[in-house]
Length: 363
Figure (tube, rainbow, N blue to C red):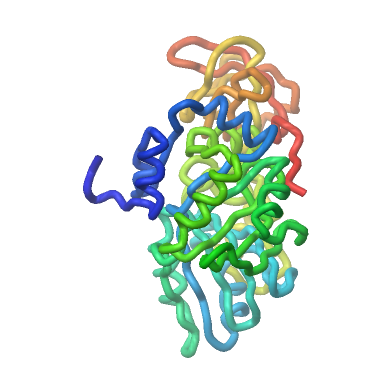
């Protein structure tokens, strides 16, 4: 593995557990673990509880007088909708309306916002915010100051409660706690569609929390299961369902845009696209027969290409191939329409559906 890849503070723990490691966003991260594999790890999260090391996710802090107001003038969602102690999914767009990144904003107060962008985009998000910050507001990258563990699944609350951690706070809220000598933020968030928590921990305390979770019987899960879980939910992955070429309007992420706000990056372009209607939109595809779709596969209706997949996988829950795809809005194709996906030269039938592919249980 390239020496240029960053490593999680839990790297040695992953090696000891027989993890298959792979590069992701500039980091060397576990794809799956020995004795489990993607299918068992996926099932653990849907049926019990699993823990993901997602320390590759970015971290940044915006502080100073009016920090929250400044962030709100840049990112799409409306921080004024939430109170301190709450978190919010939001987007960093450029002036064309393209998505630089999607991220979670943790609102501590009017002068303090903590951000979790994606690994590969953290430096760019920090650069853009720092360049725009007014006097007195500081934007600080903290990518390797903190580790993040995601504990997900219907038994996640009971596991954390047994370890003495708080679990009864509302969805998309966070609170601080301790576990041994580790201080951590416990946030009711996740990327799997299940009831779950994301734990933000000091880098040098990550092993304490990881060992406690594994000791409590939580199954370690890799990025392979994380991808099948999020695809079943129709959650976007930056670089696939969101990008500088794929706007929030096209990705059906308009719910994360504060349309009535007076200012945010890309506002004029996004308002214009919303008013005109996007030329393509994100849709779900469920195969009617055998086959596993992947990204960048052509989608046809009546022999004419109408779009391309952005992500695709085998759904362990549905026992079928599923995909997300950008589909032309003209002519309109209603849910239930049968289309074909070109899977390595073979046209395979699929049905247009509205994600999620499985029932969410996040709350």
